[in-house]
Structure formats: C-alpha cells, structure tokens
Amino acid sequence: MRVWVDRSGTVTTAPAGTLDATTSGWLVGGLAGFGVAAGSYAAWTGTRLVLDRRRYAQWDTEWERVEPGWSARFHR
Image 1 (cartoon, rainbow, N blue to C red):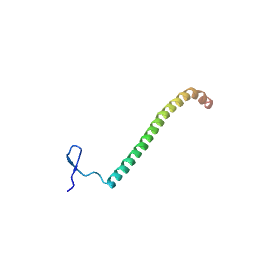
Image 2: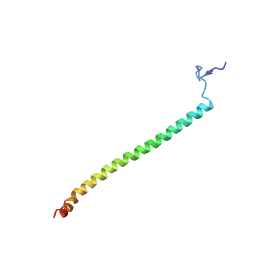
Image 3: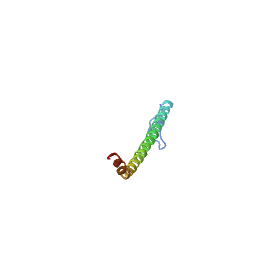
Image 4: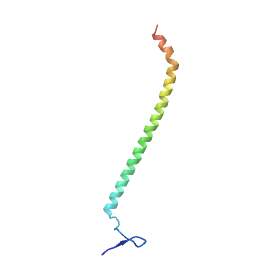
C-alpha cells in the first residue's frame, strides 16, 4: 500500500496527477488573463468617464460665455 506523507511525516493525499496539474494551470492562466483584461477595461472606462466629465464642464463654461452673443443674433 502506498502512503503519502508531507515533510513533517503526517499522512496526506496523493499529489496531483499530470492531467489535474495541466487543467489547473490552464484554468488559473485563463482566469488571470480574464482578470487583466477586465481590469484594463475598468481602468479605461473610469479614465474615460473622468475625462468626459471634465470636458463637459469645460464645454458648459465656454457655452455660458458664448451663448448670450449667439442667442441675441436669433432674437432680432
């Protein structure tokens, strides 16, 4: 009978087989790739949101300055 022990001599389960190790490696690698892609997308979306809010605020400020002159032309 085969018995597996760890470094301290405690009986433990058998180590993972080749198929189990390969499957776990592919799964962890795929999840890591997905995590990097999702994180990159979230960072891009957040940056875009911040920049869009800033740009809209600048447009509002400029429109408040320019609009009175433009609207006066159409009210004659």
